Length: 97
Image (cartoon, rainbow, N blue to C red):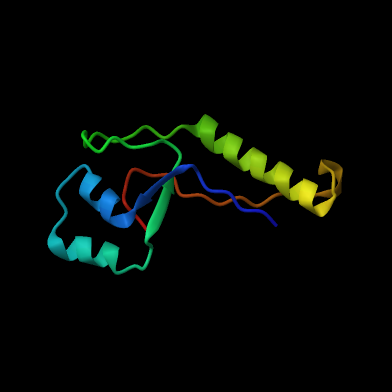
């Protein structure tokens, strides 16, 4: 089994502050209470601009592909030995757990 995360790492606090609209204090506290201290994004965000970042599908596909290749190598398998891969990700413009 292999896992991979994008290189762009942010604390939840950084992302709450960079969110493109003002969140009520109660919502901010709920996000912080989720227990997720770090979040990883495909595209780096610009903290000076609160514009929504366009998600790069190419970078996401590359990350998933590299992880699948790594998994095969670690397990000493070829693509022909595997029926399917399961990949999970979250891709939306909303701050979520």
